[in-house]
Structures are given as structure tokens and as C-alpha cells.
Length: 161
Image (cartoon, rainbow, N blue to C red):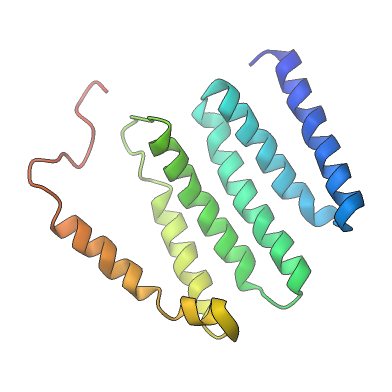
């Protein structure tokens, strides 16, 4: 990435962080999400996977931190945000045509973190707690999809892709 473009992205993100902080009384808890968004912008410009990984992880983590800071009692939000960040890396890579072998790796830490976050959230009252109690259905659905996937579909991309 050209130095000029990277500098431009950094300045835009810093400006957005200060605007949001002024408008919504958001403080330092937004820094992690802002850095993640800067990495995602760099990925969008270059399609370099090296920007997608920290961008997805830091954005998810930062959003969890922001949510927790607003609610002040939801420790599960940070864990859930981090898990969503990992899963987001996989989804963005898949949607943008990534064909690397082992593309599924973010699903492992993401799935574990999502399960832990949902277990923590299941004790919460309200909609989040109710939805979190049903997360095992997601595991069942994924298992059904894997079992009934058309035969002959490769588990990995063909060699040389």
C-alpha cells in the first residue's frame, strides 16, 4: 500500500474517532474498534489478507468493549465480540473470493469464543439471554449441513488454487 494511502486512512480513522467521541461521549473504549476499522479499510483498498485478520479481530473486540462500556455489567460482550471478529475474518475472506488453503482457521477460535460468550450471556435477562440459551441449535444446524452436503463437493479448494 502506498504510504500516502495508509496515511490518509489513518487520518480519516483518527478524525472519525474524535467526531464520534465528541458526539456520543465515547472515550478510550473506542480506540480498539477504530484501529480495527482502519485495518479493514486497508484490506478493502488492497485485498491483502494481512490487513483483514487484525481488522476483523480488533473491530469485533472493540465493538464488544464499546457495548460493555455502555452496559457496565456485561462481561460476555467482549468475549462475544472477539468471537464475532474471528468469524468475520472467515466470512469477509469467503465473500471476497479468498481461495487460500486453511481459510477456515478463524472459525476455530471464533467458535470457541462464541460458545463461551453465549454461555456467559445465557444467564442474562431479556432478549440476549433468551437467544443465548438456544445457541446449541446453531451447532445442530451446522452438523446437519455438513452431513447432507452434496457428495463430491471438496472440503478444500483444489490444489494450485
